[in-house]
Length: 357
Ligand code: SER
Image 1 (cartoon, helix red, strand yellow):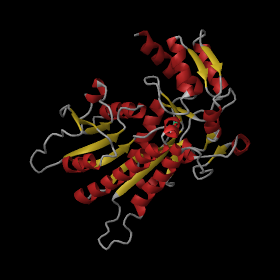
Image 2 (tube, protein in one colour):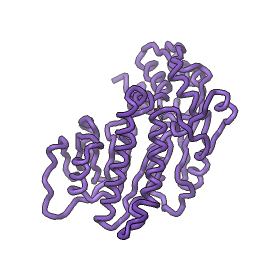
Image 3 (cartoon, helix red, strand yellow):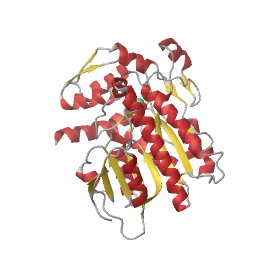
Image 4 (cartoon, protein in one colour):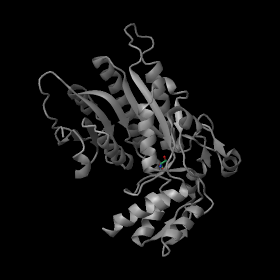
């Protein structure tokens, strides 16, 4: 392994000579997606992972990284030091404040979600200028970029395309939509009037995750969290008060399928991409259907429905389903899990094992 070290933002190791190490950067590395992505990249033999998070990473994840940095993506000095230390070829920018948390501190959410992304896009462009190759910038956006005004419109709209109903009602959704545009700008129009403009610096690739469900981690700060919270609570033998109505329906995807899709999008020849943004989904159960499956696998599950009207309104602004045909066609998105197999083959066995330990 190419060295394992964790460092505070203020104590970067010194540059060895004048050469910078080639690296793939992952922000928000300690989050749910970060964990899965680092494991997957490590399994593929990547030994050049540089991971940033606000908190120190779990030791097993840290051991898979060439370098880990505890720091804030909004810290311009930190990004400057990354530029000096590493020759970045790929960036997976995962760091964000999710939709529920963002509503309590909308301005901070904007600073992190948009300001942080802007800083990283700029870092990508500077990196590309310095080493002469485009930097691949993989950006997970979210179903939250969509916004339907009310439940009746949501129900009538049914399955929507990536370019429909883009009037989000959450700060998080507004931030994701803004970043989708920023990515497009950096890819096609960055410094378009400058005499010394260099084209094709940033190869921006964007997918929108639906609600994600992981057997290994419990989410925090999101509004689609009722799905994973319900099953983790049942496995722990705890009561769960679901904060949305039983008839609430949004799309979901298991974490392994989300990671596979992310890497498929990253790997594909750019010329195969026919849309700027890809929606993903695997299944769209109601919260009641989800609870019924949880009860089937955990007969003692104690689930009640106690809707929180404000959080309900957020979920009611997200589509019932999204059209993922472009992702299937362009980069071979093919989720392994439908709702039944997600429970049977992935969630239940792994969650049981996790809490049996
Ligand atoms: N899971 C996210 C949230 O609930 C949506 O992408 O905020």
